[in-house]
Image (tube, rainbow, N blue to C red; front, side, top):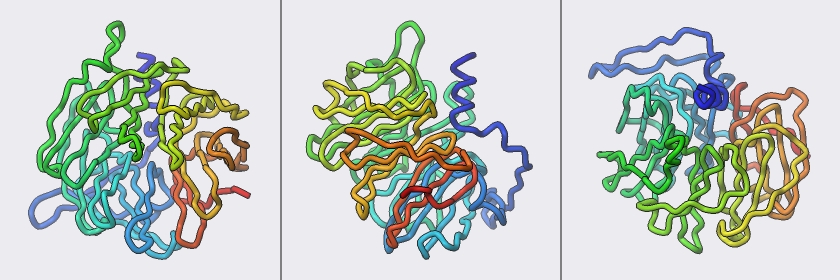
Length: 326
């Protein structure tokens, strides 16, 4: 029961109290309704793709596009009302969005249209939290209670895989939250609940547990350009590894807020980490140290992006807003 409560709190979805509507297309698919304030509602991820286009995803299947660095947003209708949690693009046009109800959506035209590739009403494994592709054909999606899906045909077919090496034999499978690929070593990393950190040397086919520095939940893992691996999670816990996960060093954050995501700002040459309660951590030295920049509004933040105008935008419970970073 405690794990289920934590799962709900992390993704801040139960406080959404407005009704859901849908419209119907000519071929009978149900599309979510255009919401006037979609850009001010809960958003979970944001990415910059081809020609400086920004794409954000969030509650009720909202997918938003901006072609002017975030000044104006337009909503794309899609055939789901599920909460969307994560985006991944292999190039400027082809990408995927995943979320609750094991939904997987694919676009081949930079987000203008989306098709359902997978969905399920399973209560045992109710959501996907991250997705990653090694190329346009081969990818994996991970989520709640060990949910692990794989495709070798661009998502036309998804197979559920049992990753026995990641199971806790006393508790079962944890939630798989985040994936990160380190390009030089070609190693794929995973961050999960119950202090689980893991690495794959074969692009996600098999996994090995890493010695973890922390037994609480990790919500995000990133591979930095210099090869460092950074993992973050509950109660402000932040760790870095300089040796591909063999050893970890804790980074003092001066916060007890959950840490959700990381952005490498190229224009500022800084790392920016965002989290709950308006937490923004800034590092000038590849996460050897960070300084806390607390937002005055204490709004929960889920992800960040840098625009072509070198502005930092963040998304969270209040939609798309500007970062408060010096």
